[in-house]
Amino acid sequence: MTNIFTSKKTIFLLFFLSFFNAFWAQNIQLSKDAKVSVITCGLGNESYSLFGHTAIRIKDDINFVDAVYNYGAFDFNTPNFVPKFAKGDLQYFAVVNRYTDFIKQYTYENRSVEEQELQIPLQFKQKLFDNLNTSLASGDSHYTYKFIDKNCTSMVVDIINKSLGSDIITKKTDTELSYRSILFPYFDHHFFEKLGTSIIFGSKVDALGTKLFLPLELQKSLTLIQYNNQPLAPKNQTLLHFEESHPVSWWNNIYTYLMVLALIVIWNKKGIHYFYFSLMGILGLFFIFMGFYSNHSELTNNYNVLLFNPFLLVLLFFYAKKSSVWTYRFALLNLFSLMIYLILLFNKAHLLIVLPLILTSIYFLIQIALKNKKPIPIII
Image (tube, rainbow, N blue to C red; front, side, top):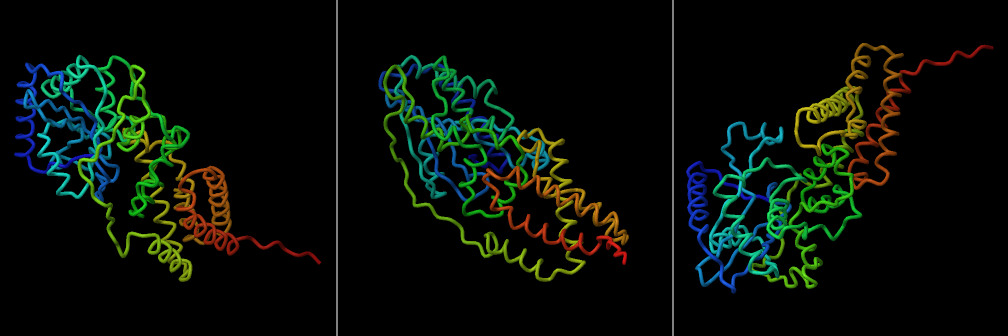
């Protein structure tokens, strides 16, 4: 979804060029042959490119303009980059590139690029062009990245709608699916990324996906939107085409995941119980911490802590102390939490991916509960 710029000199140069181009472009009046289009870039295999990318192209041969406005730039050299990203304070910004440079970058990355020309009057093309340049020159193009609410796609939608004077561009497809269900297929060839996002995302991503936040969704919606009783973007032109290729990993796949859990179950020693439940409980504490610490609303209200339950750490404490009564009680408490979790997961996209963890936890908890259950005396 984003482009990466790792050099501070590159950042300065991009800012300078963006400001210079924006300042220069303020005085340009687009010709009647000017074209405005939405660019949709294909999926990549890096974490930042798994969802594709959206940009705006302004082309006017008479004025020698062919520029791509890109709201997905950020700087890896930002101080405290990882904490800021986790907190939700990382600043993204827009840059403008020559179309030829933009295409070269995606050719280098072997990512497809498609274009949808917007059928809007010249006055609105001019307004969009002016708004884009004003945004770059004034710094309004800086924004705090939010996974669903504010990203390269939503920023493009917002500035086009602003230029058209109303919310013309809205979501037209998959509105009956949850955000979680929409996102799930994007991780098909990145198993542990799929598992990680499944368990760290909270209840917000289970809401119906009514917002446009992904490039391919915007592309599909544009083909269905009517403007002035005609299609807003009737044609989809391929600028670059590459067959999708996916990395082959000996470890990042479902087989490794199932094999590790199978070995844990087969080994089934007391030490394994400590390791497994300690890891699950610590992850649960991390999820709770992130829910309070981070400004990413997707991380709040995370019911996955019913599986990654911090009470497992309390269970281990009594297990180590050989307190059968309290070990038994907390084993039952965690089993009860898992039953609630299964009910909550009944219609969720990530049920199957976490099911092996659920079954492993249930197996170990039943073992511990039976081992520490106080025998009922038989009176003869």
